[in-house]
Length: 262
Ligand code: 2AM
Ligand code: CA
Image 1 (cartoon, protein in one colour):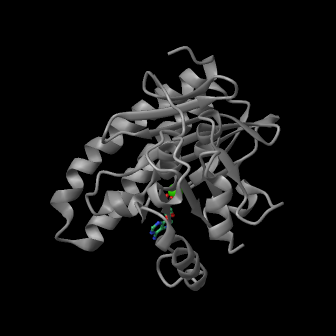
Image 2 (cartoon, helix red, strand yellow):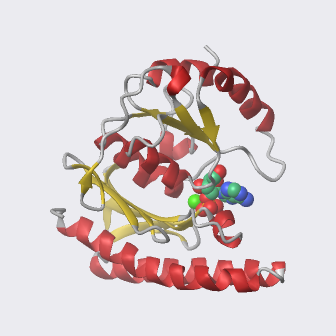
Image 3 (cartoon, protein in one colour):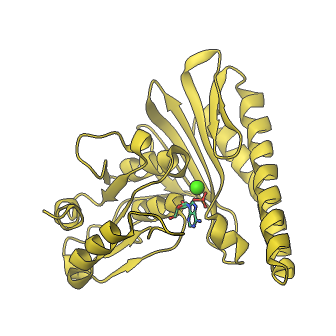
């Protein structure tokens, strides 16, 4: 691997937090009988992972800012650089003993993501990208798929959970898209969904009401793999709105047209 010093800091932090989460993930199954107990255990696992990431990342670069799911925001002496961190993306999967969750770490410079790591520790799949250096899964270069036919294309999304008001909108999008494609998956980790688009495992992904830490790392991984990533509503800001649509470049317009209702 030939990343920059910052990338190596990110990877080291992800692997360290990953070891802690994998250990806790093995315990989760034993706790399933007490739902309350399992929930508390998982939120402690999440917080412990974030602490490891914070110690590693801010320890190595104390002047960078910090934005993370659990600990909120800390300004840095250097206002142009910021870590954007989700210690556990796919928390619901983790809680249910489903091995589909990830650590997401992005480095933002002057409002642009310049490096990203999405680490699926349960499967030991480390997705990473740096501006101009391409996207990688462990040691292998990634490239989005080249499927152009909708009927062969597989997509992913996140269906609103827990009574969120945007369910009807998502159902309409699904009603437009599902008859014309090979399937739509809902796997519960936006960070991994984007990494999978980069890896060509599915052709595209869209979701709304996300947070910057769910998608910042995925954004650069998709783009460095040759994919397109846009705000769901044209002209808006992906990270500020938490809305994204991404796909390989040959199917993007057909896919986005159906999702956006054109
Ligand atoms: P999280 O696991 O870090 O919370 C999937 O739809 C995306 O939505 C995930 O990236 C997930 O991030 C986020 N999300 C937040 N709350 C969720 C919930 N209750 N159920 C499913 N996903 C949730
Ligand atoms: Ca998340």
